[in-house]
Amino acid sequence: MKIVDKIGFDEILLQLAEEASELSQAALKLRRARMGINPTPITCEKANLHLLEEIADVTLCFGILNLSDTEFDYIEHTAKKKYRRWKKRLGIDKE
Ligand SMILES: [Mg+2]
Image 1 (tube, rainbow, N blue to C red):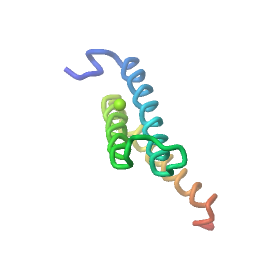
Image 2: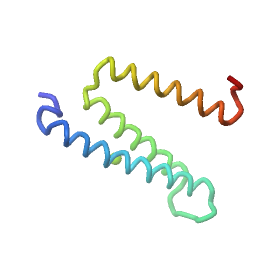
Image 3: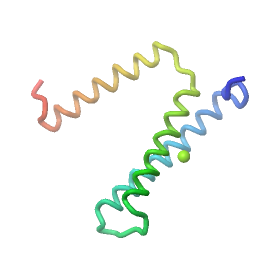
Image 4: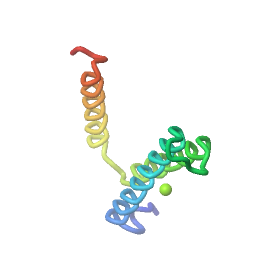
């Protein structure tokens, strides 16, 4: 049995939102550890590992959502478009 069949799509969305929030917090903590302006007892190494764990959690939720090939294609296309736009804004790409 799949996890989504056991607890339902809406609970996966809830889990994704929770994990995305934790990912956000982990990114902020790593930045704080790296900058050292407002010191934290957590080392950069531990903060980085925590970030990787939260990326894994979010990635796991994506997998459980059981997205279709069309939806994955849309995500890939959108990410590429936004990557090009970001580079353009930074003046890296002149397109
Ligand atoms: Mg998590």
